[in-house]
Length: 494
Image (cartoon, rainbow, N blue to C red; front, side, top):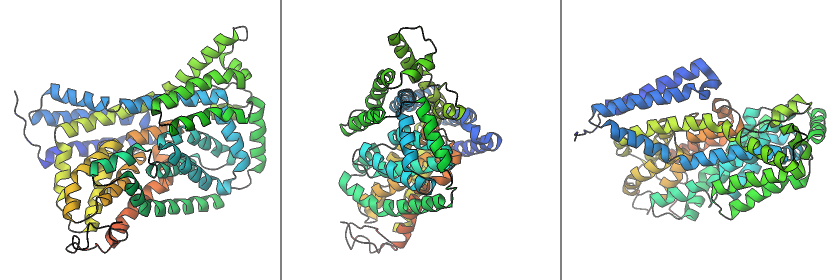
């Protein structure tokens, strides 16, 4: 038996430095194409380096291997959802669901209000489904598809989708993180947690809406003719009908019934493919290209291909073909590889005690409410960068800072709110984070391109910091509990 020893600060910092240098190098060399392979290599090399440092401290190769396997295994649920969404995108293009959403959207939306409308609609859908992932993988795909037709930025459209989706996700009692974080912090109900988050979430979303409105009013608003031409082009290829929206309604109903996400998404994809030969017979036949084949076999083959390899539209309009030739489980494999690489690195860092060594000194350094909140924000964001997973960034700080917040006399939901303000919302801003990889994969926009437009996700942690240092909305356990802490002039807990 080998004796393990606690890591030094240098041991803990060295793998992080290597990770940052390698990731920076890949982004400089490959730009927006970094996530197509180079980032994965950088993460794997960083994981190997962290493993070598762990070996130096007495950890066996078997224990490190098991830790990596355990870390990757923890993400399999998310991976299955990711694959299901890939299948759903292919199925909904085949059945005409996404083209119908795009067609109706082109009639109702114009460039001046497009970004604002997208953010609000995605916020509502995110709150109803409790999932930013489902919102982005369904309506988000359609909205990003509309952007080129309206002559607006697809990257900005993706930012609006993510801003709205994450607002809805955070404020939904159905959301996994909204349920998870207060349960770990303790002493906070889900309802109290949501009401506490509203103090920072609502101002952040208003900032995002103002930004999107200014962008929309500054955009080219002379897209009417091309929009009508796009509607006619869509109608010439797909059967545009309210019936094609039934698969979308089915997914919403299954989400409200709390059906497990994978079953709801994958089941909807299967039923959408079964629906396709009746709503889009010409599209299905063109997709397979075998007019003499039995109709039943053609429908089955189309379902397998669309869900597995992705839908490929074969019409005379190349622009329409490019918009709707997407999806399939295969399209998500690069993203899965990215998630596995990030979680491998995170697993070694946690197993060898490196993450704990980095966090522990921060816990006791806060001297005021503002500095304590700032420490949590920095920790959560740092874990999103280093660990590459939103759940690590939510769970570890929720555990690590409970006693510090209690000693400071801060209400428990101050911690749960701050964790969500920084851990949950910043996860899609990191290309190698599971959330960033997912959003980039399903929306078809590199993380580095949509990042400047994910205004809500940027503003939320900044507002949390501002409120923390100014005392706005800072809640105390009691009036006497916070007297010794400067910067705690906020309202008492409600």
